Image 1 (cartoon, one colour):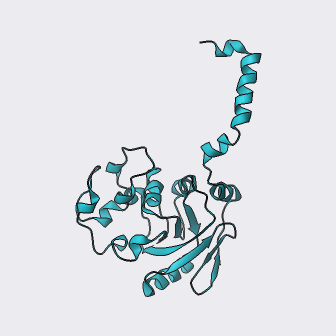
Image 2 (image 1 turned 60 degrees about the vertical axis):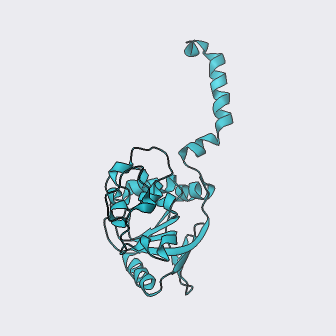
Image 3 (image 1 turned 30 degrees about the vertical axis):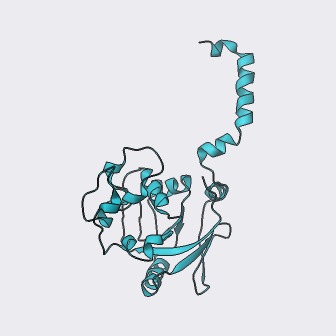
Length: 213
């Protein structure tokens, strides 16, 4: 997983509350367990005018011209600004996979659903919680200035606006460390691979009957 420390990017506004995981990546696309290939179907029902199915060539599908990610410069956005309770619904990990595959690195909202919030850290996304009035103010700024960019500094736990305003955010220290180092639970465990192998070899010597076929 790619480490996250600082990021600056165009902000795409999705000004709606309670966007659930089925809206982020609809259920028909959940057959794959790979972490890549979901970006073309991110927000599929909002993004396209037809019904999407796995394996379709999305470049040939009719797009909704009113959906934000179908418009310049937001199709190149790497920061998503959303309403409260973003990522509610099921626990599917495909939702952060799709957001990451599209190109998003940072999500900003007044609140996130708990399981979705945890899944973001496991997949290299930084979910930033800011006060609702601050998020509303950012929506107005993005609306007034297409191409509006935010700079996010994870070690400093800050979001900086183009005017130089610095917005602080809280984050759990362990999650912060994992994201800065580009680690998920498997990666964290593999840091102790030598100790694990040494323990297994010692147990084979001490209790060989446990390892008989």
